[in-house]
Structure formats: C-alpha cells, structure tokens
Length: 53
Image (tube, rainbow, N blue to C red; front, side):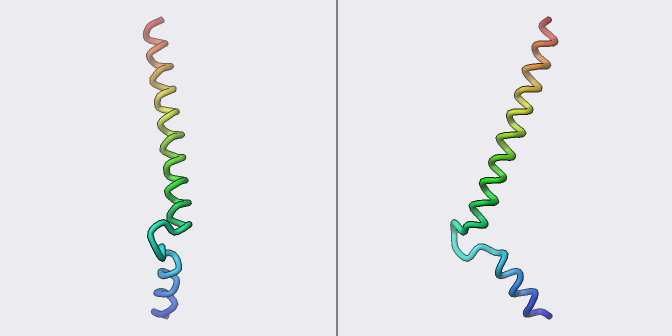
C-alpha cells in the first residue's frame, strides 16, 4: 500500500527541471493570470468611463 502511494506521488512529481507537466501547468497558470488581468482592467476602464459621463 505504501509503495503504491510512493509510486503515484513519484509519477506526479517532475523528474527534472522543465518537465512537460511542469511546463504545461505553468503555461495554464500564466494564461489564467493574463485572462483575469484583462478582465480586471476592462472592468476598471468601464467603471471609470461611467463615472466620467
């Protein structure tokens, strides 16, 4: 039982720096960051335009 848990954890951890799973996760995280930032900026600009009019 313990060996199966260790093997599962070993397969999920990156084998070396720049593993494809690590790169995929970082790319997805960056894409989400960019998307959320764009929505916040859009909301802020829309809010400013309603205040000025």
